[in-house]
Image (cartoon, rainbow, N blue to C red):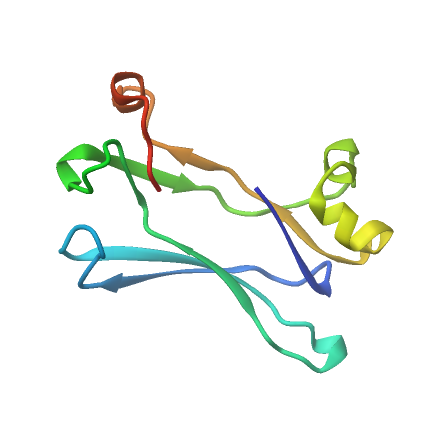
Length: 127
């Protein structure tokens, strides 16, 4: 995934984990992970934005923890080059060459682990 924030390209992206007591589908204690993008201080607007997720992916339509596996979201990496992949994206259509002036980060989202066999067995993932 690639994210863009209309803030300085050298701004920091924060990560935090919180614990909650309930999930819409499966009651219990859950961790919620969050990636926080800084606001644009140059425009005097410090409205932060965020992505939030649970580190669990369900492997069947029934949201049961016994039918789930883990999610790993890597740390963000600074995008140094605006390559052809980005130039063919919606982000580039929105920002154009100005994208070079903003915070652009990429990260990977991985479901499960190599040996868990869940996706091969069910052909289903719901994050």
